[in-house]
Every structure is written in C-alpha cells, then in structure tokens.
Image 1 (tube, helix red, strand yellow):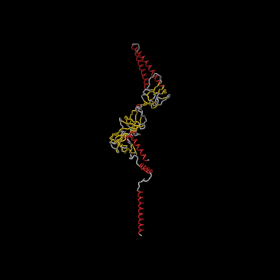
Image 2 (cartoon, helix red, strand yellow):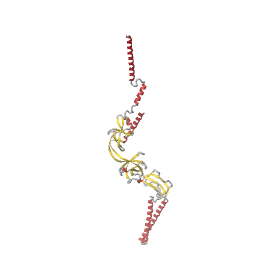
Image 3 (cartoon, rainbow, N blue to C red):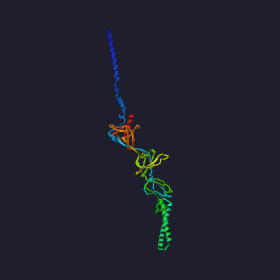
Image 4 (cartoon, helix red, strand yellow):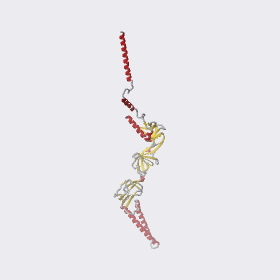
Length: 401
C-alpha cells in the first residue's frame, strides 16, 4: 500500500516538471527579439525598409553641401542687416517715337519717282538724297526764276544808261525815273520767283529743271516708306517717315491717385520684361488733363537710346520712387525663394544651408525687408539660392518615392 502511494507521488512531480518545461519554452519563444532566428536575407530587407522610412536629409529644409560643393555651385553668401528700402509706384507705359525728332517727308510738288535710293530701316545722314522726283511744275518755277533774273539784268543796264544820260543833261529826268522803277519791279519779280523755290526746299539747280531731290532733314532711320520707282506721287503724299531713334519717348499711363508721385524732373526706371531691358530717364512732361474715357493722365519719360534697343511700340513698366524707409533686417532680392507658396531664405549652417520661412515687408529692386523669421547678422545665400531650392525639391521627391 505504501509502494502504491509513492508511485503516485512521483508521477505527480513528473507532470508538474513537464508542464513547467513547456511553459518556459513558450515564454522564451514569445520574448525573443524580432528578426532573431530569421534568415540573413530577410534581416537585410527589414533593415533596408527601416532605413527608407527615415526622412531624407535627416532634418526638414536642410540641404547638405560641403564647402567645395558650395563653391562649384556658385553660391555666394551675405549677412542680413539694416538697409534703406525705397518704396516705388509701378505704372504701365509704351515706347514711342520722339516727335520732336520725327519727320513726315512729302514731295511738296506732284511728279513721278525717277529714282529711290533709301530703303526701309536704313540709317541716313542729314542732307542725304532719299529719292528724286521729276516734276513739270518745278520746271516751270525754275524757268520763271531764270526769266525774272534776265529781265532784272536788262532793267539794271537800262537804268544805269538812263542815269548817265540824265546826269550828262542829255535825257529827261522822267526817263531816268521810269528806268529806275522798271529795275525795282524786276528785282521784286526775281525775289518772288526765288521765294517760291525756297518755300519748296529746292535750289534753282544747274541740271534738269524738273529734277527734285528729297533729302533727309536730320540723321535718322527710315521707319516707313511709301514710294517706289516710277510711281506718280502727289504733293502731299507721305513718302517717308524718318525718326531719330537715338532718343525715344515713353508714354506713361498715370491714374489720378498716382499723379502726386509723377512730377517733371523725377527720375524713372523703365523696364521691358519681354526684351530684358532696363534704363533710367527723366520725366519731361505730365498731362494737365484726365481723359474722359481712360480716366487717366499721360506722362512722358525721355530715354537715351544709343544702341537703338528701345523700339517704338514696346510695352514697358515704369517705376518711380515714392519714398524710403529704414529696414532693421533686410536681405538681397535674389535671396528670396518660394517653397510651398511661402517665402524662404536659405541660412548658412555647419552642414550646409537650411530654408527659413520668413515674413517679408517692403521691397525694392535691391533689398527685401524681413519682418519675421531671420535675425540681423545671419549669414544667408545671396546668390545661387535657386540651386538650393532645386536641391531641396529633389530631396523631397526622393523621399516621396
């Protein structure tokens, strides 16, 4: 009986030990770290996935660049600080001919184009022959002048002879006075015939009586041509339009609220975005009236145009300084970039450059006022900031992939 009880006790102990071993194995299995016991290839894939989940560049808005990379990219730096910001008003305008140096060339006499030497777009000098016109009326005027001169010479000879006879008591004083009167009348007729030719801008000429030369009144460019060889032209036909393009006008549209800014003598900056041109000139005229239809006045800026780059008809933007303010923190205009529709400035950090969102204030062509997001003395990318923007965009695209 005692032996049977001992056997039962040993069986109970064995069952307890077996249950303990099973529980211990289960505990060890569930507490083992993920990846242990897996093949090496599966562990590498898991590590790669974990690494890909990390943000690109490590820190948001940071572009990692070494000193050598910065130099190769042409990125320059400057220090944020105080600057004078000039506030200005922007007005639309159009380049026009300088009307004081533009001429409509007309024949003044009807005739036929005998020769045309000037071409459209040609630069001509003052006095250069543009065309030759054969005019019957001119032949008549020159013939009349020649006849008047002949009569004048004859009347002068008669006068001198009658004067001598009268002085010698040979002829009567009445004959002398009549000869003097005839000579005076002949001189008047000569001056009248000469004045008619002078009014037409022609000379008596030594060649063909009907030859009429159209000459350039000043140095300029042929901008319009309405004559060809053998064409019959009228006396009031506009055969050439000549303009001196070395100086041009810019007509500016000025709204009533901006009339106080636009004053004669003010310096204006003219820019043409389409042609990438920029120049400065003086306001030479401000209209005294506001148009009934446009509700705006017209101002004029005169520009020097030595290279003839400012062409009439070109639309431009005219900027006039309205005032100035002292900005406590300002950066150069080229340093400002837009990322996600927000202005940023790339600030120099040990690892490269970091995009700092900023709040901007007043600006001009050189500087932009920074109200928030940047402190005075900070070193920023003043030149080549667009390269940093491109690198940051490239990194964001890789992160999304």
